[in-house]
Amino acid sequence: MLLCPFYITTITNGYQSFRQYKTERNHLKKVWQNYRTPVNKNNYNRAQTKFRRAMTKHIQDTYALSIDQLNINDGTLWRRAKYLKTKRSNIPQLKNPTNFDKAEVIADHFEIQFQTNNIGNPSTDNSVKTAIENFDFSAPTTKYHKVKLSEIVDFIKNTKIKKAPGIDGITNKMLKNLPLKILLKLANLFNYMLKLKYFPNCWKTARILPILKPGKDPTKPVSYRPISLLSTLSKLGEKIILTRYLKHARKIKIPIPQQFGFTPQLSTTHQLLRVTEYILEGKSSKLITAAIFLDIAKAFDKVWTQGLIYKLISYNFPHYIVAIIHSYLQNRYFTVNVNNTDSTPRTINAGVPQGGILAPIIFLCFMNDIPKQNNITLSLYADDTAIIAQGKSPQTFIPALQKYILSLETWLTNWKIQLNVDKTEAIIFSKITNCPEVKLFGSPIPWKNEVKYLGVILDRGLTFKSHIEHSREKFNKAFRSQYSLICRNSRLSLNNKLLIYLAYLRPILTYASPVWACTAKCHLNKLEVLENKTIRMITNACWYQRNVDLRQELKIPSLKEFIQKIAEKFFEKIPNINNTTLKKIPYYDGSLLINKKRPRSILFK
Image (cartoon, rainbow, N blue to C red; front, top):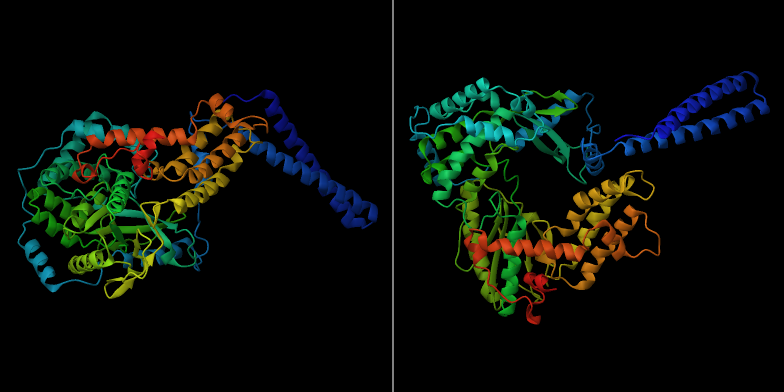
């Protein structure tokens, strides 16, 4: 972006006058300290005031100059918006003198976290141990799908340059600039990896960046969440394994249809639609729906890796895939990085590697044999699990839920999966009261008036009023973080201000909107008020200018129109999705008055 020469000259002159005021102030300060007369004191005070005003003006002019230079072509606009959006913690609060000591303390905590849960069933443990001992992991194989050069080139082409490198320092930009000769060597290397069923140890060390959890005490190591950075070559190796894993997984239909996590064409919105439609369909048939939302403690970090390998063997995955995944999961290490200082390497004894391409997909295999029951509907998105039952009275669905919970408890214990019973929530989508509580591991689960599932707050009447209020709070928080860029006095161009609204702020209001857009008009109007206020600020509109005219000038639809467009595209794609549970959602005419509170009604408003 070219800047106005006059404006640059103004900044330069302002800096020079700022330096002159500082020199004059320092001189008068010395005069007053030497003579201590009232006149000298007054002269010094006036010089100090001039200096402070000049300093404030210089800071404002410098900031305005930096705002003027922001644009989307070089990415400076998105970097600034992301910087304002992201909370940062330099971990200064931990009671340790050096960065190395801080890294060591956090590493001690994570080392305990990456351990298998101390529960289990001796019978299952023996079966797993026997199956793994009888499986030959070491013998080379000739039956494997060979790696082609085109496979590596396609992966490298789709990688993002600005992704952080692992502990080896090899960046994606380096990979993109590798010559053909080296790429051929890489293809040969990965073929040997599959043939020998050996994942290199040098790719198994993760660098962890600790991120403070929202609202947690920064002086305690338990308050930090691990974010893993893996080697770029490790990710390339994982991608090669993943393509071969998925080929067999599709044949045996893994994951189960109720699992929507990490699955092509499926999203959280699809799972939320399935849940809400099931509840509303039951309501139209005068059935009461009850749901329990499970919270698995450290689901990815505490996966029993031996149990996972046992399941891969049980599902008859090709020998080389089971062996290479076994090698991939064994002998893994991590270091914690605090302010560019690494801790000593620590061992990972459980869990699937965070930040990996393969890890979340094989986690679905670990969850695939979750118990099923005829009168129970399961809703899964990775580890987010909902158990739903329906009946005409609590005497019908409570026994069904309790029976399923008993079989689920056995399954969880067998595979060393631990629940946060205190965080597990239950709700009845009805006005009935005094309903008996379901017990989980002996602890009763109280019925709540509202629960949060996959980012949407579900209340007992499915009015989505609480969710709209939550979205407003979240929007206002994000709006405040971007205020310096989009406020009326900001020197940022109108197009860039609009981009920040469309890319960062509006998605907060429209998340999962095909599910909750059937809410009452008074709730939707609250969201539209937020949009109107933001647009008026962005355009610096006068009081007499109409919101409709502003939107027409900017060529953007109203929030209600935009939500309707999202819903139209969303429902149009559903018939093309190959998922049996989605296809079981009954079709209904959304234009009928009786269906006005169901998701498809948004298509006819």
